[in-house]
Length: 269
Image 1 (cartoon, rainbow, N blue to C red):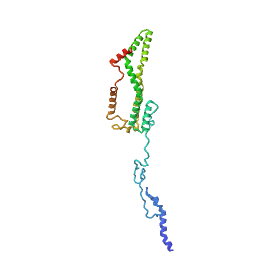
Image 2: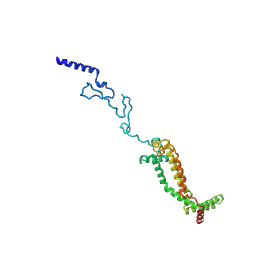
Image 3: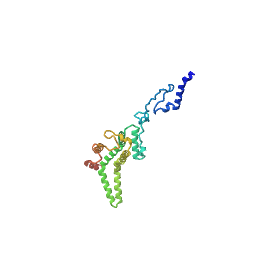
């Protein structure tokens, strides 16, 4: 009987606890359930900090992220030209793909990729340019005699004597073959060089108009944004100055000197 009287308060407390429900059902959000085996009497709920990158609903906090946070993940890959509709199988698209290859595979910034691509194109055309300069110098040495033969052919064509026209044309062709000169060879360098660098210009213009996201932070010095005009206009001035200084530094440009052409014409006649 005495033991039953001592257990009665404990049984009453357990009945009231069962009516109220378990303690973890009334825990505040973000709390931690107390460990088992320690009892529920006087147990306190411990507030835990939110996981990085997840909001705290109880305190109304926003997600906390930062560099290097696992919740952020790796940086997104750079946008490719194909995703912007660039880099097709055209001269302009091939130039854009070549610049992108230098940027991605060689690890160069965009300004260095553009500089290296332009220098590479110049070096590739160097043998053709040297040959064109030799042809221009050779043509300039024989230009007076060629002009005389062309004038004779034009006079023959104005007449009605076909034999005279044939003879004038044969003399012109024999002179060109004997001295290995032809006026059309002078157009070889512009015929190859002009489309290439026009393609470079159009490729960069379309990439800046898209714009390619990498160009907006791929500049150098006072022009960090390659898709925007030069704020100081220094680059256009440098290009203009280099273009004007190139003929002065080159020296011989294939033009006939007043005295040398006549001596050559008399010797070759």
